[in-house]
Image (cartoon, rainbow, N blue to C red; front, side, top):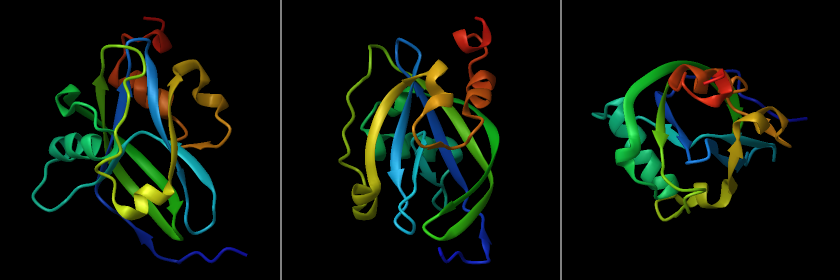
Length: 160
């Protein structure tokens, strides 16, 4: 049986939904060190003291992917998150930003990952928006397509 702490933690955080020229979404695949479960989610992470959400989004994008932080747009949408990670329950609102990149599947660099992130980051993929619901493992947040629709209402996912 898996042990889970009874406390819920809110960690102010951000995520960046990255789109390539073909409208594919960049997802990172993480293995939970506590239970081995796998989840796919956009790049992002915790807001450090003194940072704004936008500054954090740009910093985290560079750390986790090496992609150009200038691509992160200023508008964010609040997204309610509720997940277990490493035996801890995280819940609360995170800011989600949009970044668009020229070219197909821009290559990533993992140079900025912390040691535990280097171990737990299993893979990445540029996923077609129509395939978001058919990933082999859990998608976080599960309603990512709705978030994408709110950030980019002109996209093909919304008939645009």
